[in-house]
Image (cartoon, rainbow, N blue to C red):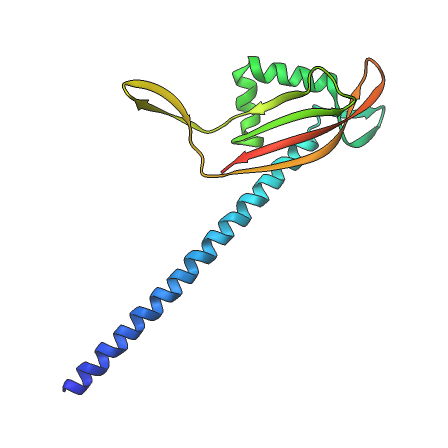
Length: 167
């Protein structure tokens, strides 16, 4: 009788320790899969930003890869800054992200332009004052080289598009 109870106690003890190791390994694996999924989502947002039809350099029927028309870019940035409905329309594509374009060569006065900015935030009361505080766990930043086409001068510049995705 006592031998059976002793064997059962040892069995359940070993089962408990084994399940602790198993679930610990599963938690680590799940965290790794979440990081991979967040990186894939960030890469998809980068591709959407690079190939926006609103910004492409199109000449008759041909398109240039990784090329952004500066005039279109400036108008889109102005529209996003002034119109909240436009920002809501692009939220379905970009989510919580910030997209900036910077011209590196030739150096110009407008070195960086924010195309889209939607940083997750929440309102917290600190010392009786309500403040808007950024609330995200991590940020994935991707930079890609692009051509910037100036249609007025008919010349190209070199730039970098930076996409920050907030997870």
